[in-house]
Image (cartoon, rainbow, N blue to C red):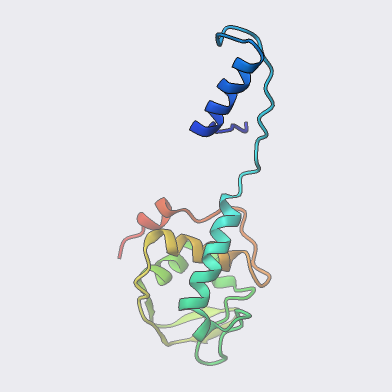
Length: 150
């Protein structure tokens, strides 16, 4: 079920519109068209996440998400991200050290903690999980990130 939030400005516009039509009370039946905009929270998160990615991740994982063979794993079409969601979020939130396997290739390097806020971690994860051949139906939320402990 989709709902629309009526802002104070929209509410004032409705009152003015109703008064102009001669409706003095809310008990009067008046049809007012209020367009419901598509929820773009995931799309907005992805846009913000792209900026975070460009600032913090692109140096190692490259603009295409392909990484650097032997040094930094790919994020593009990365089975590790899709099969280890919590571990992937943990790596972005706290950094990563030790061996991992991505797309059948072993990596053993260090990803330093980036110092991101939980909302930034969620945004960059949403960007990564929906870029370069990755697809995730379930958005990463700030609440989900906050629940992941060191």
